[in-house]
Image 1: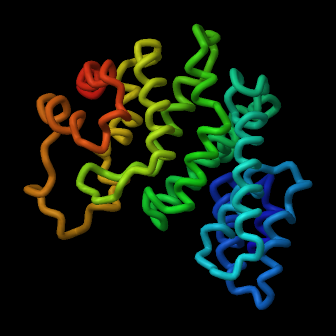
Image 2: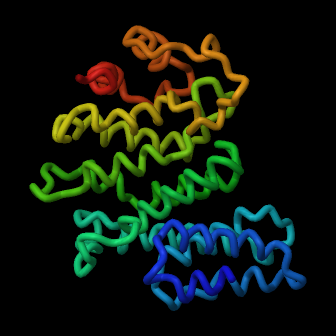
Length: 281
């Protein structure tokens, strides 16, 4: 059934269904009678030129928890190279790959991810965030792949974007999806994770005044600061109001921006404008 969704439903199904089906197929491959089938599946869709399916299957296999994945080190290296490739060539950001991936698509259509960056953000948010801690090998692999692709670094070097650019929506949306642990979590940031966070802070700091509203940067910034309660995963029905610290300018300035885990990650200049973004009216 999942194969049918992946191969036959690309036109009629929204991208979340397609990507989730691909990830699920990768998860289920852990139960293959022959572990070699996982490796075969890993490369099975490479010639289809569909990053939605390839990213879902490859990452689903590597996140399926099996200790029998053949040639694991090679598969990890190959998925890192694949991520770097699609973020450079099918990112969805015109300033990066020179392509308008929406060209030819109808104005009204079913949900589509805006390129490989959007797709990768979904997988990291929905799956990596839930199944892997920040300092896990899988988390380090994906964050390093994002850094190695050089996308955020390339955007940082831009002096001006076109008037019709969507980068001020696309990149903050990706940053908002990054699996950053909350301030209440005991998870330790990896250097790979911190490197992507540094670049993300820098992007927001450089361009937030160019957004339609400064507050448009708030969701991404709140996620980087660990103030989204790990996408609500740290909350439960038993969480009382007294366990949640009210968000105030003094709390952000004096506590959140000064937590030890963020020192060396959040630029000093960024600390000075956090409240300006978060509490913009």
